[in-house]
Length: 461
Image (cartoon, rainbow, N blue to C red; front, top):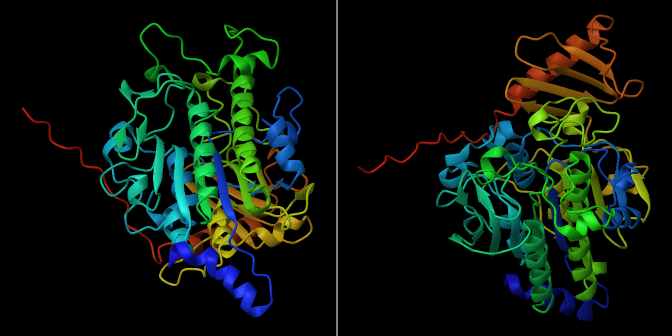
């Protein structure tokens, strides 16, 4: 029945004398730590990102798009479920053993492909998983027909290692491959698009790049210098030698390599004749990491304060680009306050699926807000990570940066960089917004999944 849905649309069109649009293909690219100021279309004059710039020109670029948390694992659990981490039960960054063998996201939770398969979609995850790889937690056990990628996060781009273990998988089995990880993911994505375009079913491609995440010391070979890793062609785009040691230049090369692979995926859609019936989304999973061990000063949050893993604007306000020919007007700039939690409701609506009745979704369909003038579907957005909590309502933002710290209040309309704390001057607003946070913390306990504690397997003597 599911595989017959596109045919049913055509039959209905004939008998009813009307045109019924088939569900669109969906390509969702989730980048790893791209800062608000890291792309050309967001104002960066140094970087070369022609494909993402063109994608933005052909669709909508968002200026006030947020992730509700600012660490890799938790962000991914949130976007895939459309539910806040406090509701979906995945609240912390998975450590090494959890990435390899942990449940991670509770099995009670449903994620994007599980919904979309109800509308007949073929599904693939190609790239970084990072939400648990225990039996029952792996991509092909959570709704994806195909998986090629890494269980964990910041793998070596060429050696594909994480904490000394090779970490590239096809399905549930190790897959030895050679090449730059982003290239491998783009090639596999293009192959999936080509194959599925011949099958008559709509397809959903989730492409979580591991770029531009920094490769830390633990993931390089003995004697190898940890540094930003990019293929030679990315350096050549700037006229630089691949042996270039300047961190800023190497970071720009990583961004350009990622952009090049975005271009490969878009070209595959064009070649397969799928451009006009495909919703393409590019979002960053959080803001840039600006710690000295991760290339301090090379990534950019533009005018926004700090980066990940904070809940200041630099950590949670991220690039977001949407293209859907005929549905989203080219060249649109949306200033609506939106969230990555909105993607699942948007995908469900696009696929002709109803919102689930058996669980609460925290997002809202954001398509109407992508016309440049429509208001946000949210009265306010809440953010949470460990002992940090924040809320944005209109232009006001209240944040408690750590437990027992005093509240800080900012007016983003006049102070987008969060430099002028208004908490002392406007105590009534602080009290009101703090009460909203308290009520919200009670609300997200409804329909909440219990976090799964990781229990390492006992070692055999």
